[in-house]
Image (tube, rainbow, N blue to C red):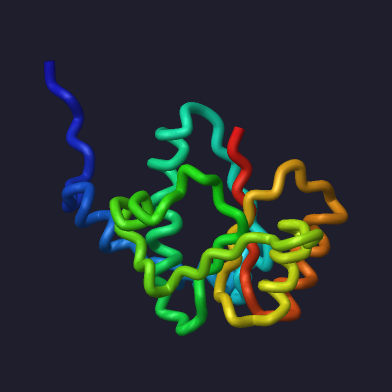
Length: 158
């Protein structure tokens, strides 16, 4: 059986055909994204559930990264769990020279101390373990973080 011959056209391999097509100009996705924010968020919260060792393993790289921040200010931890010892910081590879550990004293609450540390602006990030944290508490942390040009990170361990 013979097939009628179609007019001969040069056939390009698929990739070359794609490259031969005129391309629309690429948009800058960062500039076009409505979610792009040049300012870091004032408040973030992480929730860990499971065995304490597993939660600590997940937390370690986050704190390590924050402790190695190029910002000259402190990474401040407010009332961390007793399981986060100096040995744990060392084993997790944290830069202990850039970490400030604070515990509330007297009648001062962990929330009050966290807000105070945020407002002072001597820390790039203040990590707290406040649970439960309601909307009012969250707003207090946001306001304090903005006042001190810092970030608030609350960790919830479940």
